[in-house]
Image (cartoon, rainbow, N blue to C red; front, side, top):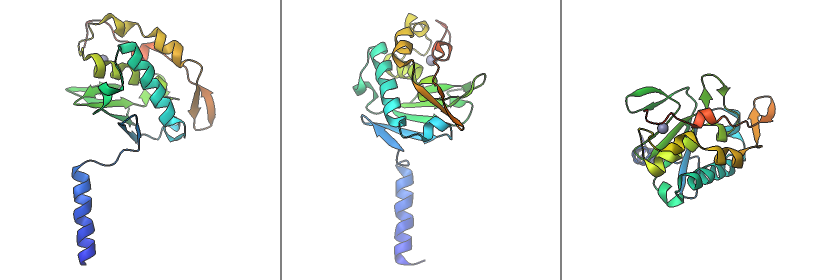
Length: 174
Ligand SMILES: [Zn+2]
């Protein structure tokens, strides 16, 4: 191995230790795209994710400073690991929001607004892992704000329908 290749290997190891670079950053929040859902490959993803998080922050009474050290991962798998739970659609844990881009009933989501991101931003702002706050069963103002947007499939554009049931959670249950 030449000296320069050895140096390159060391550099790569160093980079891996610090985590891979994000796919993009919104308002200082690193976003990792690990899904091949059609919406995730569109040029409007950063702006759509930003406005979705912004609407969620206002609903939960937070602001972007609450997400200063938070990362978001859009996962391709049906479920994301979360604590001891292997069948979560989303998770907020250790400063990381992970959301699946698939729903067991609906299939692959058509837009980032349909994921449980709005719900997980709630955990990042208010905590409340046991869902005792009544706002977990509200969320209509966020749905109204994000309604009427465009969604994407492999074959073209569709409506980005918001299902409140994806974001909501029964009060007092984990
Ligand atoms: Zn939750």
